[in-house]
Length: 177
Image (cartoon, rainbow, N blue to C red; front, side):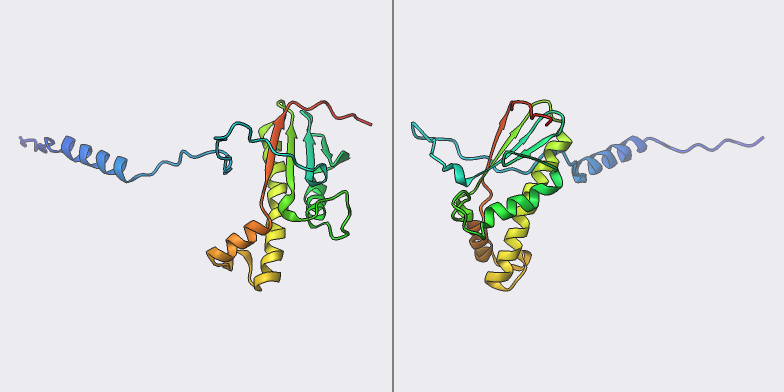
């Protein structure tokens, strides 16, 4: 008869425990989800409201069905980016539009029943418009693309085209005319 051989497994638990600790301490778990937005600083004075001229506000309204009202005209989402660029640039110097890009505020009025995907698509179009404007300004002013700019040049571009967003919820339904 043959004698059975046995393996001493006494240190196996120690090795498994050490491996568990190693993986727990070296693994990063991505938990950040959502939109990258910078919130305004809290108001430390009594009244922090400010008057904004109507001509400086670019109005976007979206109801729960995904109908878009852009500058009081029913439009498709695909038209938003170009309309916003034209509004900000105001190349015709119309008095009904802002005098400078620094004074533009985008007012986003969203229905609470709108799904999150549509909300993100609207924000993406607005950000894409600003991205195009900043890229064009970078090439014109510094003869570089936006990502090639130094930190000081980037601040200059951001000051020339600041992204000023106001959001609200609970709009009236858009007429289906």
